[in-house]
Image 1 (cartoon, rainbow, N blue to C red):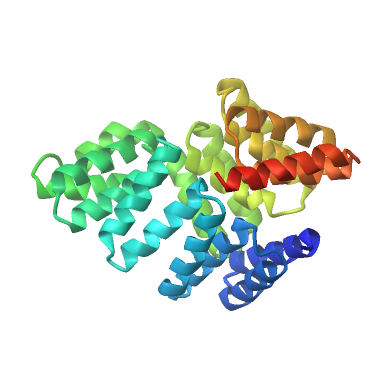
Image 2 (spheres, rainbow, N blue to C red):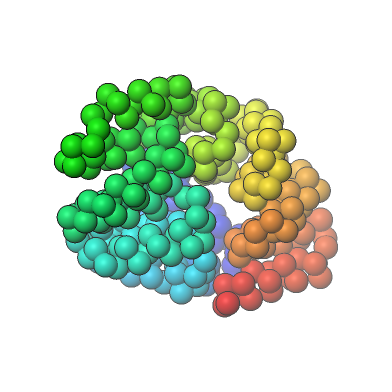
Length: 309
């Protein structure tokens, strides 16, 4: 196994994916897998790209392999559920989204996926309950609000205006988030980061906002932007000190800045709150950098042991 080379290909794939170069991203992810076939993250990102390319059956295979390697990886189950939804395999999709909720009961996208499944199965009662939970967890999502409004209108419960009126105080964060998504798709990464930062400032407890910002920033190597993000995530921790994701992203940021001691502290705190194979692996890499080789090996072992649970 050559983790550094595998990581290089993985980062290349993420870069190509952000630029919309899906074929190139697929090749890079497959090269990462060839060099390190037991890291679930490469299979996860390969699944994402294959789904975007419309290669749905291959995407299922990639996600299934990622799931075998790390059964508790939230985004793997979510991505697999979304592919099953596209394939109209609704029972399989429902099972995936329910697994996501078992892993993280506050993950709004899983409830939205459930809502779509129940709506397609014409079970409007369950669809309404799922969409309502998605909106409760992320009231700034225009997608969730629209989906809820649509299914409620079919039941003659409420109008779109009535629903949106109850959420208007938090719509500004949603505007920034969706602006960031558009900017990211257009390749305007710095502008997208600025928009995501504003969304996180306005609504710091929304997992989707924090996750998207963290995903983009962790893949870059721009110290000034990362330092700005660090201040945001430190503010999130002040408000929600039990946020394992915030500590995880802080660890990623400090790692990019080569601030190894702070990265070690952040990853360790994240693991105390919520053990995760990928965080154990990242901590192992940090410990290697500071010549704590025995501790690094221990962290790697914990990563693989956690995957095997």
